[in-house]
Every structure is written in structure tokens, then in C-alpha cells.
Amino acid sequence: MNTLPGIQLAALRAELGDGGLLTEPAQCHVYGYDDSRRHALPQAVALPTTTAQVQALVRICREAQLPIVARGRGTNTTGASVPFAGGVVVSFERMDRILAIRPADRVAVVEPGVLNGTLQEAAGAQGFFWPPDPTSAPYCTIGGNLACNAGGPRAVKYGATRDNVLALAFVDGRGELIRAGAPTTKGSSGYDFTRLLIGSEGTLGLIVEATLRLVPKPEARRSLRALYRDMDAAAAAVARLMAQPVVPSMLEFMDAQCVKLAREVGGADIPDAGALLMIEADGAEEQLDFSVAALAKAARGDGLIALDVAPACPEHDPEHGEGSSRREAAREKLWAARKALSPSLRTIAPGKINEDVVVPVSAIPALVAKVGQIARDIDLPVLSFGHAGNGNLHVNILYHPDDADQSARAQRGMHALFAAVLALDGQLSGEHGIGVAKRPFMAQAYSPPTLALMRAVKAQFDPQGIFNPGKLVP
Image 1 (cartoon, helix red, strand yellow):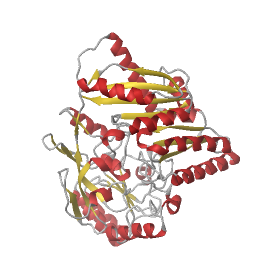
Image 2 (cartoon, one colour; image 1 turned 30 degrees about the vertical axis):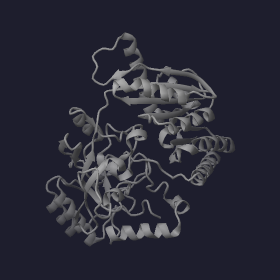
Image 3 (cartoon, one colour; image 1 turned 45 degrees about the horizontal axis):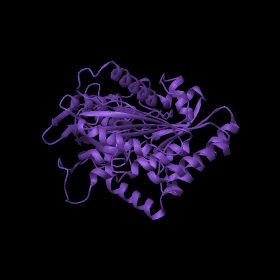
Image 4 (tube, one colour; image 1 turned 90 degrees about the vertical axis):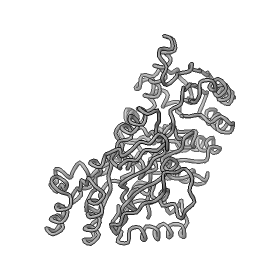
């Protein structure tokens, strides 16, 4: 590993204080990977505690032409937080304060290192929640959620990260502090830098503060479980569910193999089925009967095997009866099994290509049909689950990496999947981001003038090109 020049080391240590700069390879090693299983060793790791320190380190790195890679907790799956170009990893783990929760304004103001789960607990104590709820919520950071525009099951009703951020403070590539947005839900005052920064994967600026939109916790929720003959029937049901007026608070999809995994590995009580939809409604208790009836009607159709409706589950209810408690326990076990699906896939094969593609909801049936065709063409297990209400499916191609033929077929399947998604007017990623894993495909997704404009925007925010080089934009 190349070491930093002494003058820069001294300058960074002076700005960051005791324990604020790590340079030993053993210390830096754990900051060099993410959940993509890629790894590279940074030259140093900065642990700032204040915005002023972030500004200072950006200015030092800019002068020395040192790459800067922002990092939360490394839950990203596309290599976006891996420092392939070396340089300095900026970990925001010490900037982890909830600065304010203001119920009257329905906002929370936080630093980037706050864990999603920590924010949910603090907001919940005051009767609110922040809608983005990725599977990694207990240990992913708000900064990471912002960087990749994280979503989760609740996005179908409440939106993803970009829909739930009102304002940001960030440090640009010159070391200047920029404030964008306001703690209001309406505003028409110039360019919307807030939405531009969200999903930019640390390539435009380092976020140091975020003002987040909070939503009151619903009075109650009710779940429906629909089992179908095959994936096509379930996909058609998704299109029906999203075409009627009642928006589900969650709408999750599992194919037959995922249903089997959820039962055998996750312990969920599910019979065999060609596909499953997990549907949830929330809101005022007096409205739930109507909402559930509307969702159940839409779920019914050709290929439905069984439709189970759980009783109302008030958020702050005392005991609702032993039968209700059993059904709620079964519901929680099913959701837990759903969240455990991704790691459980490795019980089938050690290699996994997980692509979180997204298409318009009306195109879900066509995408599901194409995934089935790809699985037959490459003769490998291809399992699908995900946030069907947003058109966002996690398509997992399973293979043995030590088998060259299987590896080649898996890659062929991934290329075919991306081509199909783009042909359906979809996008390469719904919530995981681009990073390095999908960067080569950006030229297929966007025209040369569009990519040129992306590069020009980056040059304005980051003139020296030091923020997360080699990511997102080809």
C-alpha cells in the first residue's frame, strides 16, 4: 500500500485530532470492503466528528489529489464504498447524532452516521417513523440510505429515500459547505440539489446533515397472504392490486423456490405454491375493513390458490386475543423469513448474482415471464423476490463460481436480464445503486448526451474528480 506523504498525514492528524486518522493496514482493512464481497485497501481512514473537519480534509485531499470515498456501514452490494483507487476513506461512524426531532414539523434532523434503526426507535417514541426500511435497517446508516436512495417494503405507499428528504447540508469538492432544501414540504426556489445528491453514491459531495420527513405511525395494520399457481398469475395480481385506488402499505413477491426457502430455512408456515404475495394495509382502524376488502378483491383472479386475511393488528393495542396473537406471530415470522431470503440463497449455490432491477408495475408480468425464459436458457436456478408494488424485483442467478461454464452462463443471464429490463422501460437498479457492479451497463441505459451531462454535473460539484472515482458514471 502506498503511504501518504508526511506533510499530508500531519495536516490530516492536526485537523482530525486524536484517534481521528487510521493509517495502519490492519486498522484500514475493515474499511476496504462492502457487502459486494469486493475489497481494496485505503491509504488512510478519516473519522471526522464535525462538519468543519470534513471541510478541512476535503481541502487537504483536493490539494494532494487524493481520492475520497465516503462510507457508512458497508452494507452496499455494488462495490460503491470500496476504495479501489486508494486514497482516504471517510467513515461517518462518529457523526451519529440525532440533532432534532420536531413533531410539529414532522421532521428529524440527523448526521449521516445515525443508524436507520436508531432513528426509527427515536421517532417511534414520539409516534412517527421514517419510511425507508431496507433489510439492513438495524445496522445501515442514514448517509448510506441517502447515497443509494434506499427503499424497502414500505416504499410502495410512502416512497423511497428521495421522497422523504427535505433538506441536506453537504461538502462539495472544493471543501465548501452547501445547504440545499428546507424543512418544508413545499418549495419552488431554484435548483433541487437535495434530490440530485440522493442516489449519487458519494460522487458529488459528502453529506454532513439531513432533514428527513417523518410520517405518523398508523393506528393499525392488517396483512393478507395470497398463494398462486405460478409466477405469471401472481404477477398479474400485482398489476391488478396497483391499478385500484387503495395503495397497500407493503406488497412483496416470492417465487416458488423462495417460498420453499422461507419455509425450510426461515421457518415460515407456508404451503407449497408457485408464487406468493405478502400484502399489507395500514391506517385508521375504521378504514381497514374497506381497504382489506378492496385489496382482497384485486388479489383474486385466475391462478389464485388461497387467500388468507389476518385480523387487525393495532400498533398500540393491549392483547387482541390468543388467536390474533398467533396469527400476528405467524405474520412476523413470514416477514422475518422474507428478510432472510437473500443470505439463505447461498444454501442452494455458493455464487449469487443479485440484481435489484425495476420496471413499471404494468410490466411486472412481462418481466416475470422473461426471467423464467432466462432461467431456462442458461439452465441455472434463478430466484426472484422483492418489492413488487414498486416494480422492483431482486433477481438472483445462482451458480458455482469455480465452474467456468456456470460462471459464463450466469454472466450471460445477467446481460439478458438487463437488456430485458431496459426494453421494458425499466432501470438497472431500484435501490442498491450502480457502484462498479453495474457501471459498465450505464452506456446501454443512457444516451451519450445524457452521460455527458452527468459528467459535466460531477465536474461542477467535484472539479478535481476526487469523490469516489470510478463509480456510477462510466
